[in-house]
Amino acid sequence: MLHVLYLVHDVSDPAVRRRVQMLKAGGARVTLAGFRRTTSPVAEIEGIEPVDLGATRDGRFAQRLSAVAKAAMSIGAKLGAMPRPDLIIPRNLEMLALARRANAALGTNVPIVYECLDIHRLVLRDDFVGRTLRGAERHLARDVKLLVTSSPAFVANYFEPFGQIVAPVELIENKYFEMASVVAAQSSEDDGPTAPPWRIGWFGALRCRRSLELLADFTRRQGGRFEVVLRGRPALSEFPDFHGFVEAEPWLSFGGPYRNPEDMAAIYGQVHFSWAIDFFEAGQNSEWLLPNRLYEGCRFGAVPISMAGTETGRFLKQQDIGVLLSEATPEGIEAMLGQMDQDRYHGLKSRVLARNPRTWSYDRSDCAAFVEKLRGLAALPSTFVTEAAA
Image (tube, rainbow, N blue to C red; front, side, top):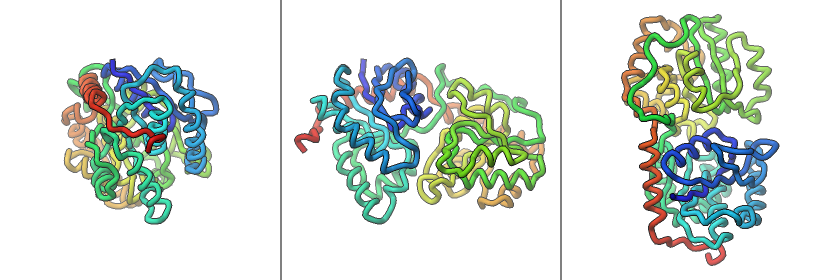
């Protein structure tokens, strides 16, 4: 059985749980190690007790670097009792540095697969900081065997033009993971809440202050014809008073966190539309990503709302589904949604439901194919040079 050491920036991130699920479903054994954003260590993820590397804070890059430096000194002892892995998958740049350190500390020479699902704004800066981080990434990734990323726009706009990595690319989109085989959509045109009010669901990592203010303004203008339901984990570092703001808005509500995949059908079954817009890193990562909520919403029949000109917008245009905004203003949303009626909504939803369900979901066969690719990489002779010898 392929043994994967998975090094992550935040073991409590729901996306980490999904990747662990995929690896295990594909037939891999997983050792999970990483930092956390919680006050106390995480007890288990999918039956695995994570190796705790310490706490970090969201949005505090300098603190994260300090935590990585500290972990680099102790990672050999932290992982010392672990059986030798066949492969290391570091998630994000700081974990790539730890992956190389782990190989050296453990005296192993196993292949590294670099997983990068976001392009941080710091590496895109045209100054000393940006150039230093890009140079560090090129150095650390010089002999990785595979780059795993979630959007072709990350490759086209960052990895290729900056010459960051020469390894082959594996595109693993942020699709919904089905435990059973993907055969057909399970939503129908008659499913969902009655309307009006029309409900827009904004689920997942809530980090975009501009989206929150835009949706609040739009719903106030509509006087109750539209409501916004928020679920997930708000990045409180990005909002002066997230909970107070939402409570003060008559047509916004926050339902707290949810479990993925356990709660997905229920939460998307309560809304008509899915907000698939992010201005958090406008012009960069936010325009290039294909977010989880895009796939999850469509999987359960929610009509996606996105911006024209973004990678998500181009994807939806290619699929001929969804609502594309030409401008990020309350007036722009009103122009596209303000006259919504039952006939138009059912037309929009029917196009989502008509798409091949594999567009939105991975199943065990996809997991097995990915793990088989990793198994092939693990079998290759390694050219890795340990940090001690480099």
